[in-house]
Length: 265
Image (cartoon, rainbow, N blue to C red; front, side, top):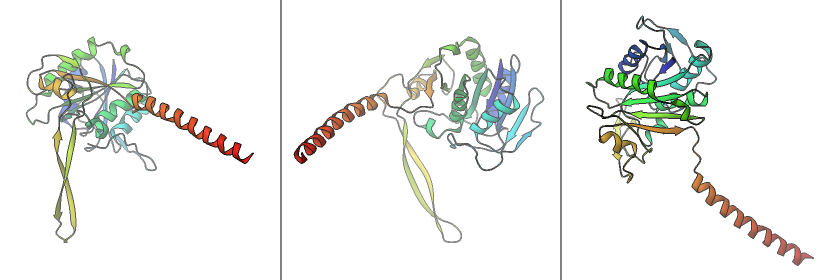
């Protein structure tokens, strides 16, 4: 396969390069990634200013390009310009740190995969625990096996897979629901040397999802969570309720207007 690999940790990230080195043994690999870290950039794209692209000599086994753009920019340029649309699969990662629950809104890693889905190309976002001694090599071997055996034809249009690895040994992978995992934010006020106040944001993880097969529960059991995600955020249940309310209000408004017109006559 012709595989485009990107990330949001930067072009020299160990997770990205380890994955590319493993996959290039059997696949045609092209790396296009930000020149520096772009974590939490979400699905931002660069407009009204240039995006610089430079080929860098990181390894000799596959071409590596560094850009000044976001992960989504990297995918756009990688597919449309550098690969001339000859891409069969896009992988964003392996990210340093999980992307679970509401992380997918902020994650540049996930957005790289979703940009691939927008372009009609099968895509994976892959994340690992934020552990300095994490073994990316075994995670890369797992991904190599996964993409060889998985039938990407089952994915609907505009859908990508969000994969998260557990700590320690892997028991396999399981389909997982995106959880409601989120953060209780805190802001610590600090003073800079000039006497100005600034704030440092941090927070506590909130995990109260009752679903047994949600993403964070799956990785806690030693499995890789595999969650199908889409670029569209439409809530079907609420949409149906809105239509019901809309119909009732339209009837009331029409009846009220009719009554007013009758009184005028």
